Length: 210
Image 1 (spheres, rainbow, N blue to C red):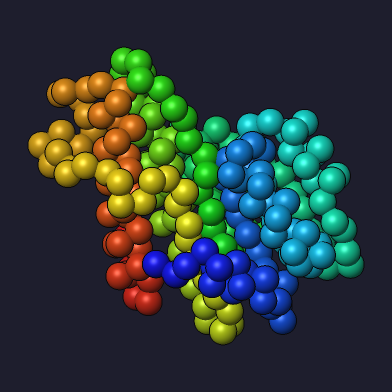
Image 2 (cartoon, rainbow, N blue to C red):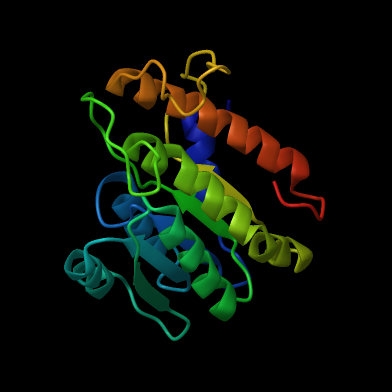
């Protein structure tokens, strides 16, 4: 892992010749909000950012505070990522209007240690927000990421969630329907994300979906 000073130096030198496109979930608070603000200011507004979330008012306030330039594009798309039908609809919408995606960032998630809470699709809400939505959106948007790479531009996926900190995966209970606790769901989602990223990287250069 690079040192903090080296990371800061690399970030400071980031000055792309192209206008990057970033799609970010969980963009209206916490880490997601900070990433939107810092990157847009670093590039003086020369960026296209799609903020995905559930609070339109907060998103509009964030957008109003960002630097605006001739090449600035900021937009908000509402999406409750706990439902996979919503995630697939989001991907379809993005695919219809974006030529590429340089940075796909997953920050949406929930925290809770209570009992199992299933969505209408039969998925635990914690796993839906913290893993299944990230897998589905990444898989659906791989063509747009590949488009950026084919243009000679960077294309990457960042899943913000305790990388390398998860426990061994329970292969006999992947959906956590047998032995559920909120804590187990939170921790298993970390390992699920690590596996998702590993599979995504290994298949990124191919033509098959993950």
